[in-house]
Each structure stands twice: as structure tokens, then as C-alpha cells.
Image (tube, rainbow, N blue to C red; front, side, top):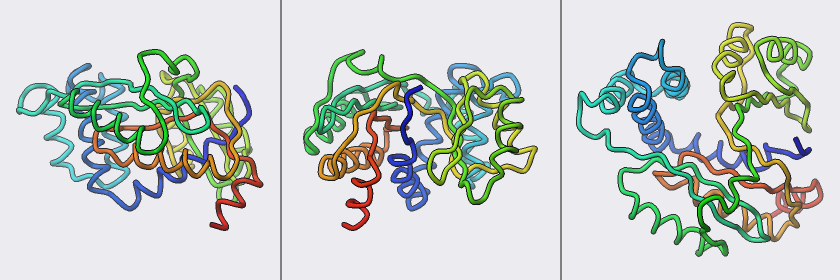
Amino acid sequence: MAGHSHWAGIKHKKALVDNKRGKIWSKLSKAIIVAAKMGGGDPDANIRLRTAINDARAVSMPKENIERAVKKGTGELDGGNVDELLYEGYGPGGVAVLCEIMTDNRNRTASEVRKLFENQGGKLGGTNCVAYLFERKGLFLFKASQADEDKVMEVALEAGAEDVRKDGDRIEVLCDPDSYTAVSEALQAAGLEPELKQMARIPTNTVNLDAETARKVLKLVESLDDHDDVQSVSANFNIPEEAMAEISQG
């Protein structure tokens, strides 16, 4: 894995999530619907569904909302016609951007996402134009000041994590998608609660951005992430410390 900071972009997403609980509930409902549609409605037998339900509970999504989403996915209720897609494109500075989409209307979503790219100086591309630049991984982030790095490393690696490293003021844990639930449950059992955990598309290499370009890319990522049908946004950029300092100063 190339050395780079995932937190530089993810913290902006976290702020959006924190401020828009209703929107994140809608996105998580779609994740539950798709998981139940693909693997059945029993979370004990469907790891993806169990993960989606745990993520929903972590943001206090009501039990009835979760149950309704599961029933939509299994066909017991209407509303389960949700497709899972990948949209790929380029942002300012040639940054590769990958969006995980869940939608009940492909044409509408494609048109709206294309417009978001264009409005922020980017361009929606074709299938596989940038997907090869990313690897799907489980990602857990801890504040270094609030977690014991040695303990995080011991628990995570024993549960199947691939890598644990300190990145600035964060401790980052990466794992294979098949190990995501095991690592998550092991960390929880050890009393280690990550600041953020998610399945993520991790770039295999990154583009260093100056402050001006970084602002444009972050604006694109935020506008995409704010769209109801966009589950997650990944981009292969890194913001050097001096550029991040300039951004922070406005």
C-alpha cells in the first residue's frame, strides 16, 4: 500500500454524516435492502447484512426502520428494487474518483452525478476508467490520543487485519473485506471503539495536491457524498501538511 492519509478526505465525510442523520439513515436503509436482496434476511447467515445492520445501529437508526428495510430486500414489502453500481470519473488535478451507488432509478442518478462532476470541474468516465486504481478494504480509524496503539495492533492483527499503522494523529487499521466483521467484533469486544469504520475503496497510489486544487477536489467529494444515492466516495489524493495548513486558514 502506498503511504498516504485517508483521514484528510474522510473527516469531511464524517462531518456531513454527523450533521445529516436522516440522510445517512436513508443510505443505510438502501445498504440493508441490497444486502438482504443478495444474501437473504437472516443476519446470522448473511455477513453483509449483519454488517449493514450494525452500522445502522451505530447511528441510532430505529429498529422498525431496520426491519422494514430487511423486508423490502427479501420482497416481503414493496420498495426493494435498488441496484448497486459503481460510477467512475476524474476530479480537478486528474484525481481519480470512485462512487459506490445504490439507486432505484439508474437514469436519474447518472444524470445527477454527471452534473455534480461537471459543476466542480470534473468529468464522469466510463466503466473501469479508474476502478483499477483502488482496492476494497475494511477501514477503522482511531484517535491516537484516545487509543493504545499496541493494543489496537494486537487485537486487530489477531482478528485478521492486514495492516495497522499510525498516520499523524490517527491509528489506521486495514483488513480484507472478508475479515471486516471479525475485526470489528474483536475491537468492540476489547473495548476499542473506532472513530470511524467502513468498507472503503483504498487507492493504491495518490496524487499530491496544492491547496487550491485540494479545495476543489474536497468540494467535489462533499457534493457527491451529499447525494442521496451515493453510498461512499473514494479518491486517490493526498493533501501535504503545508497545503492542509493553508486550507485550514481559509
